[in-house]
Image (cartoon, rainbow, N blue to C red; front, top):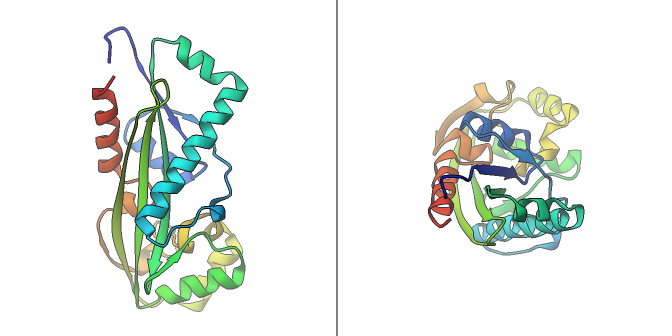
Length: 209
């Protein structure tokens, strides 16, 4: 990166967890959501699916920026602009789980984790907005649960946050965090934005500028 330029970061996500994690990493950033139909993109392999979805989100945001004039502003600037997009699925009993779409589905998902475990598979994609260069990666973590009482399941569903996260899995929630027996991997990976991978891809992207 040239001495006269600065880093401008865009987080292409509406996830509160990802906003929190990127802030914890010390970055200031602009938020832009992708608004894509995630169900339209299908892959049998979970790692391929989350990477494909991160690319689709990046494509949608670049188009949005082209249409609203933000792209011209970035191209005219001396700054290096990087965009982070990410996606995550939960793997349980060999089945890929995305965001639950009904209370019944959320109930089935959460009850399935009781005295069991699930894996989270998440992607991170860093796009250099000016050059189009992309760096991608994925990360996996496992979460083991104690018994999850029915009243906890119903409270989570009534509150509604479970409908906005992959597999309805909210390990950081005050109701569920005491029920987590162990995490193999990092909490930030489970929450949807692995810090180490994100930092690595940002540094690799900056080394190319």
